[in-house]
Image 1 (tube, rainbow, N blue to C red):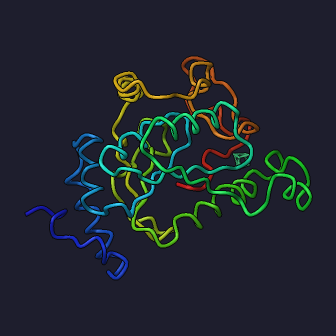
Image 2: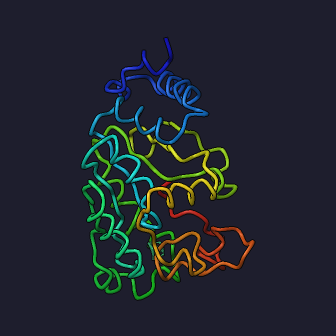
Length: 242
Ligand code: SF4
């Protein structure tokens, strides 16, 4: 009997933290070497529809993967108000092409309201606060009370993600975090994209391998760290949601 088959995922919040974390780590180990499709199937069996998939709309691989095992799966998009038009187009294409339900997580304030309270271009002066207001807080609200969320974190994305597990307890949001693509290379991503003919963000082909909000994303040169274009010129490397 595997660890996955003896763990009651509906009761994880009731377990002492150490017991919960080690149980999840054991299940995560059993999932190492499995394909993203197998991990997605495992997630559907463990959590049913009580799963939400985070998508930046750089590509729609994760929504596609989960929609095959959870029809109409909810797909969470952090609608910061600062996205490229191409990113919003990709979101809308995905909503039409796939059996998913897009959930737009909105900040409490519009960009204009934020400008009025904090001044214009907060992203240039205090990107951590801007990310908190427009990503971190809306995400936390959207995840409240859910059993699990699925993210596209990959170990190949850079040093900050090199040790990401497949499965873990997300302390900040009080739920299970699942990373089905964690072992995939850039080539694996591309192959899945082509095999299934999925909509993709046109900016990727224009030199943007990692796409966030427009004011905080630049093109990268060939051979440069793919995430070097995010918050370029600052020491910020993550928006705070992972
Ligand atoms: Fe603000 Fe930039 Fe963070 Fe987007 S990525 S929320 S614009 S600081």
